[in-house]
Image 1: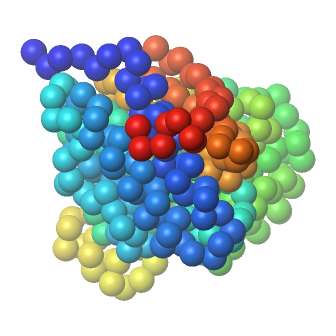
Image 2 (image 1 turned 45 degrees about the horizontal axis):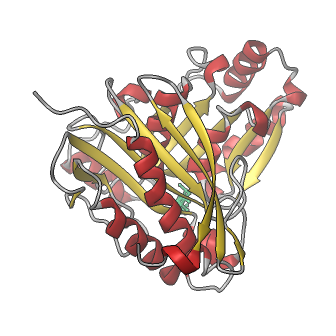
Amino acid sequence: MTPALGRSFALDLAKVTERAAVAAAHWQGRADKEAVDQAAVDGMREHLNTIPFDGVVVIGEGEKDHAPMLHNGERVGNGQGPRMDIAVDPVDGTSLTARGGPGALSVIAVAGRGTMFSPGGLVYMDKLAVGPEAAGVIDLEAPVSYNLEQVASAKGLDLDQLTVIVLDRPRNRDYIREIRRAGARIRMIGDGDVSAAIATARPETGIDLLMGIGGSPEAVIAAAAMRCMGGEIQTRLWAGTDQQRQYAIRHEQDLNQVMTTCDLVGGGEAYLAATGVTTGEFLRGVEFGHDQAITHSVTMRASTGTIRYIVTYHNLARSEGR
Ligand code: VTB
């Protein structure tokens, strides 16, 4: 029988994202994206390997951005304990962090071995994400206006009270036009759509939906969060170039198939931990004081649905290197 993960496994993961976030945060606004990522990856990898589980990286940052990865297929954890899939984004929003923008976080998701979808080289997905009140009423194949009305009615809101978060990219132009035409509000972000997807399921953020095309790894991580929070994400692989369309054909990936939350992160146990790097929709970023760093994190577990917010005061003088 596979040994179970400890009940404090999510806390162990948060310690990893805390460490990555603090390391990355030193580079905030210093216009060095590679340094942000390298610091976070080093911080994450070192601590991850002390945790008792047998993890294999299914989603490692790097395919698209050529980041110094925790690469796909890499074994992580101390090798003892349950066999799990792991998705990491040492910093979702490395560019954001490098330019000192809002909404970057460090995040890890873990689920049973073989349960996480691997998008391979297809790095983009069309996404629609909502929180628990609107789970079950959305349809990625339906018009934008339909989805907005469905979510508004599920949440008892008028359309002009509804806030849709969208990645500011030319490829999302049609979405933006349709949302405006329907009369809903837009929160435009430069990067960081993991934080954006999670925000749809956190009532304090005032964000109701995420719409548009963003990164595939980020979609799988968001799905793990949705499994824990009871929200829903629907996605479809998106190929913006001939090269990507050819890749999809070669790898027999269906660009029309809608994938739901459980297609991305299958049933069974799932965990997620995230720590803010720069202040965003639902987590504050790292704050530094004399010999001190303050981090804001969230942990989640699918089987129990527990969500914990953790504020940690790190004594840098005493804890460095431990
Ligand atoms: C988004 C965003 C990420 O990738 O998924 C985006 O949330 C999509 O890709 O923070 P492009 O930047 O190529 O448009 C990120 O920016 C991370 O790479």
